[in-house]
Amino acid sequence: MAFLVDAPFLALVPSAVLFLLAARARHWLVTIAATAWLLYAGYEWLMLHHVLCSGECNIRIDLLILHPTLIALTIIALIVGLLRSRRWDERRR
Image: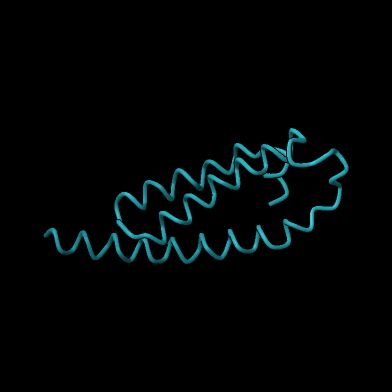
């Protein structure tokens, strides 16, 4: 996920997908995952433009926590959202 450091706007893609799933599944966990990706995109943009970093940020220890957390949260949110969405579709029939 190192490409997200150089192009933080790409983090908006999973955020948008999760927001669409959240609208359909109506589950708080999916909304939290989408919001986490949105906040991460903003955070990386600020890091890229040296607002949160003085320019000497070659070693990013924060990514050792952020990336695995985002991946785990996204996988769980996708599972919950897809299961919830399927149940909602079955109830509508």
